[in-house]
Image (cartoon, rainbow, N blue to C red):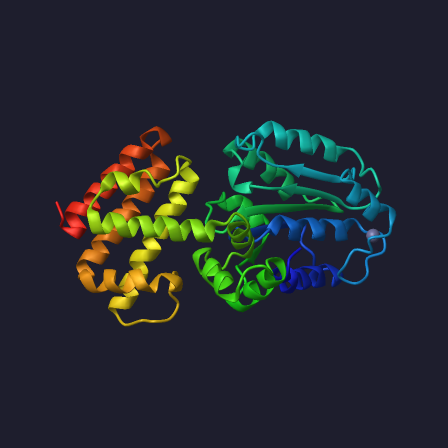
Length: 328
Ligand SMILES: [Zn+2]
């Protein structure tokens, strides 16, 4: 569990301590917040034989079993090899539920990626949710934006897990990445939309200097109109190429901010020397057009298979030159 979970965790356990706990909880979460860790701590607490208020005791037989990773009454249902959660996985779980809880206490079913339940699986789960059994708890995790079957959602109590505020995320990252300067942490946090875990990975993987080098190549591309120069700087992995497109987008959005004399909340405060002249050289229309071209390329990359990645990027760069920079 992470610091940004504490308030929600307190509210959650308080509702159970007041015997108002719901048998089915849906955690809708933004990405990069480590919400699985919150759900697992809560499950451990539900199992604990001598909970210390809102926290598990870490000493009892249940807590020991939990930490060994094989508590017999904890059932995890998740995607297997990135395939949707099928009806067989739900049936197997309901059959297990027919038997009495092995430890005589609570039973917890954790459905991770609940948005990936097939329709048949969701309908099978719905039946189980509609006939609650004592001491059986369902914990579902799904992304905030996902379309869940409304019937499933209506049987659950929903808890929203939001990104922490900037200051809290910043404070946590300082303890996690002490080797990075305050400026580096701040920049990385903005680029990662204040998602602390994503940001930690970003810093640890040295993405900050990689971003700087990439945007410097972009600058040379802008000056020369040399499509190949920037095309070769794109990563072959789709996920990384998408991140690079986001970096480009951040360059354009900072340039737009500069155009409107907004000097705060820049995503790339360390690249002012490039962004300011870039912003001065282009009209707002050109900057907006560039931003649209980048967004279209992001959508195309996500939707079209990766074989065409180079083609999509080459097309995008050509458009930037001809429609935005006006060099062609
Ligand atoms: Zn315990």
